[in-house]
Every structure is written in structure tokens, then in C-alpha cells.
Image 1 (tube, rainbow, N blue to C red):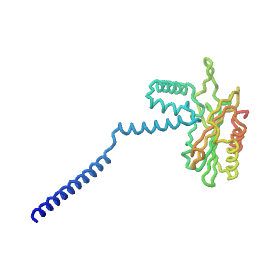
Image 2 (image 1 turned 90 degrees about the vertical axis):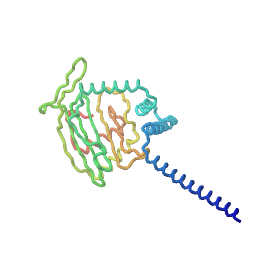
Image 3 (image 1 turned 135 degrees about the horizontal axis):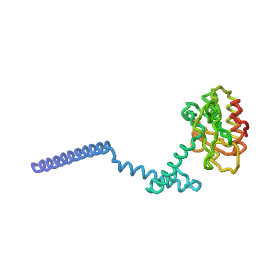
Length: 276
């Protein structure tokens, strides 16, 4: 009987010790887990995680038959992942050359300061920008919609000096634009919902949201214009909020009619003698 009680006591102590050890172990595990989860990851871990995601993204792009892997955004990402120093040296050189060209030949619109369409706090907006050969003036026409309120903002600018057109200077075969820039017309007015619906219809007829951003068109002269767009609610496909289309010599008939509609709504004629 005494031996049985001793065995029982020993067995009980064993389970108590085991239970205490397990409880301590579980407690230690949770402490370790809590500490580890609250420790910041090293920069190396974060960098490896980001690189792995970018690699997965690039791999998915390469698996698509229709994706243009010559796109500059793709090439820069790929060069970054490949540590392609030569590519970035070339990009830096091109950027520096571009900045030098801007200093030598500044664009006419240096005096125009407009908010981005996405900063206007509107539901939708379109902006038409027009330039013309042999003309020192250009236009920006912005049409926006906030609920049922439609607004048009018109600004015309030009290279001017004391209200006179600045001359072009031919120097070693290059055309130089004078440094002056001034806004010559600037106003805002309301439009009707019917005006907006017509604009939206023309954009649809022109397949505006489906047009490529740029398209080569061989012509010797003519207007150059672009139309930028913003929508708060993303458009199919791709949930797009922003789009921009630029054409030389108008582009397609639908795109040409869309641009002309901006000018008709403004009620203004350009400062140039002829409008194409």
C-alpha cells in the first residue's frame, strides 16, 4: 500500500513537473513570437521582399503576349532588377541633354500655370491644348464636371514683348523662341449639361480612351494638339483614371472633331490668322 502511494506520488509529481515545463515552454514560445513579430525587419529583408514582388510582376508581364516589353517603364524596372548600370548611365545622359535643350529653346507655355486635372476636385475633366505652325500663340481649354455643374476655363498665351509678337531667330539652322511669355486671354464660364453630354459623345465616337498616347503621322505642316482627361471613377479596362492623347496634323477624324468642339464651346478665335 505504501509502495502504491509512493508510485502514485512519483507519477503525480512527474505530471506536475511536465505540465509546469510545458506551460513554461508555451509561455516562452508566445513571448518569443511576440518579440519577433514586433521587431522591425531588416532593410535587407524588406529589400528582398520588394525585389521578389517586382520579379513576380515582371514575370507576369513577360508571360502576356500583348504587353510591349520595349516600354520605358518596363525597361527601367528590368534594368533596376538586373543592376544594369549602363542603362541608367544612358538614361542620365539623355535627361541631361533634354534639360539643356529646354534651356536653349524654352517652350511657349512657360507662363501658363494650371492645376493638374486630378487636382481640380471634380468628377471628370478634359483639357485641350493647341499649337500651330508659324504661330507664336497657343490655347489651353479645360472643361470639367462636378455633379451637374459644368465649367469651361480658357487661357491663351504667346511669346510676347510689350504686346508685340516676338520674332524667331534663325541661328545656325536652329529656330530660337524669344524668352518672353504672356497670357493674352484668360476667362472662365459655365456650360450646360447638354454641352457636356455632346463632349462625352464626341469622345466616345473618337474612341478617345482607346487611342494610343502618341501616333506617328507624316505631314509637312498643320496643327498639333493634345487632349488630357481625368475621371474620379475609374474607366474600364484597367480602372483608368487618367489618359492623354497627342497628335500632329489632327490624327483621326473623330479626334479632330473632338478638338474643334473645345474651340466652338469657348467661342474664341485663335490669335493666329489661320486655323486648320
